[in-house]
Length: 191
Ligand code: IMP
Image 1 (cartoon, rainbow, N blue to C red):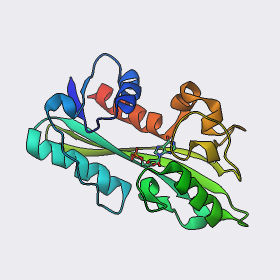
Image 2: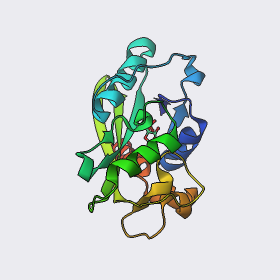
Image 3: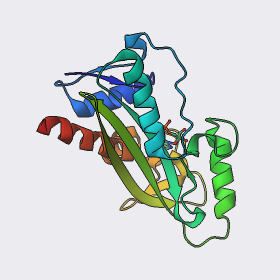
């Protein structure tokens, strides 16, 4: 089965491909000749994932899926959530995003947070949503050097190390993205 994954992030493509296995041939946006900056202007993860998948489906008429991820912090009513990439204003400035989050949580007892990934799949013209969650908490200072985004300040439930200390291999076994992709894989295997 051929599926387009609406990303050009080689890292994500490889991570997802490893979970989906041989039965699924994953194609990147580049592979189908799409160089567009696909809009993601919805105010929910579900909305953004669907927006990206529909964008590809409408133009390329292929089976495809897209993902969107956010860090949801309980004491901040779910923020930064869908705005995780640009929490501090500038997109993808991880250092500024982490500093802002640590400041917002300063003095707060409740440090509970969760990463949530939503995948929107369009298969045979039908839409499906899957999600993957990893619960944990935000530590007071950054620890560890691997990963990206908020990894240095997030400790998943049952662990004492941050995602950035655990390392990519271990993180990828338990991450929100891995769980969402596993849900997708189970669905594809059933069909
Ligand atoms: P995206 O939807 O995968 O692009 O993720 C949106 C934003 O959420 C990223 O820019 C990061 O700030 C954050 N994020 C997503 N996944 C992770 C992760 O696995 N670790 C840390 N931060 C993440």
